[in-house]
Length: 88
Image (cartoon, rainbow, N blue to C red; front, side):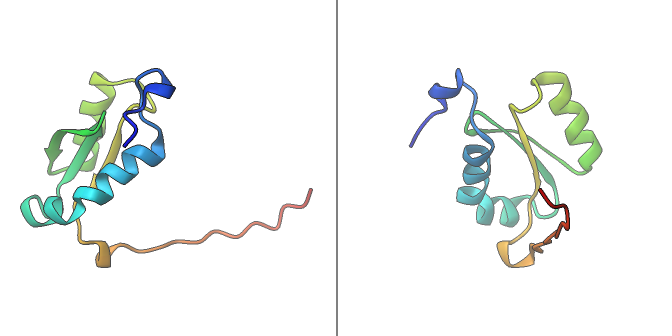
């Protein structure tokens, strides 16, 4: 697995998301409905409140260096699709 070196040590959004997906079942089991901060292929913390997680991550990391997700089971996630009528 790539450690994000081609991004100057930062992981891409896809890499952060994949790390979450790889550990989602465990997160949901151990920290159900909490919010997790993911940074550089590791957990930076779990929080009861999304705003608290965001403020903590914003204090510690640069924008684009972290991901915050709620720890729920994959089957509980909802997919939202947006359509645009903007023409080119």
